[in-house]
Length: 368
Image (tube, rainbow, N blue to C red):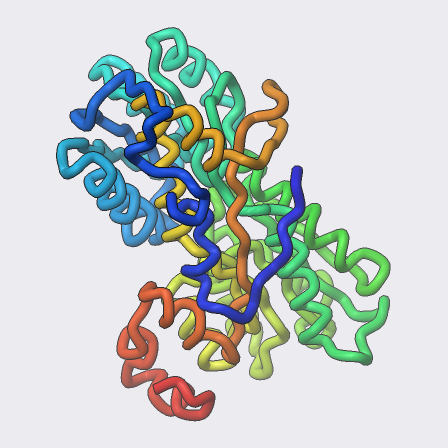
């Protein structure tokens, strides 16, 4: 997998590698040999509803970009599996039966969905893995550099602990679901930064990324280690970080240890403002979603040069090697760069973040 350097300074909208101009190709390229016109249907399958990003950001951006690329003649159809593998298989079968032109798939379970990917392929429907690398004969993959995400989280833990951090500091790891291949990569990246520098005192894999289960895991860790002996908590995403904080507060912890997150969910951003959560990983969804839409349209319209330009990276899945991919950079989100990231990119307005409960905290960090 090609490594991508982290960017922390400029507005992250400039990180989108998907813009045609940035790649030196055009949607009307003369070298394209369209197999279909603009009247196309893009199927979009998302994995779960606990994380609000899919309905609030990813799908609306994909839908708008498909419409823009097809002069409003193309359409998208959307389904969310609610973290259920059987539901997603049925949804994908329905899209195959309905003869959509291409499927963007964010798999609930990357392994179990492989037979459906094969079915789509046999039906002549390209499948582009979105955000999570599905197994089976997928045509391309659009996501973030997932090991880098974990590395950023791990480095943030060490940064929060400061120069005095050493191997006696006990860190609890609340990892994501084992059915999500990204979770394994996040964990690998985080451990590459943490191992040997702190003690991993307890570690849990969290089924379906459940905040409730994360809270239960954290309670177990507190009972095992002691509430005053936990130096930091690696939480793989923001939703689970919320569960971690509930467990710590229920145990009577008044000064929370540094807690990581991911996805820059609004609640997570507000916790960062309030000092309850140390950081999140902001993954510029416009860049990822627009790249996926461009890749889907280019694939089905036979614009091979444009497609190849979009998929300049390469990844391996357990079933397929050298899958064409685009890996979008990520940003470590702390209270110091909220304005230059999620606000500058139009993900949230200051008024969304700085509600009455957070007004004084926002003022204290100059967010207004």
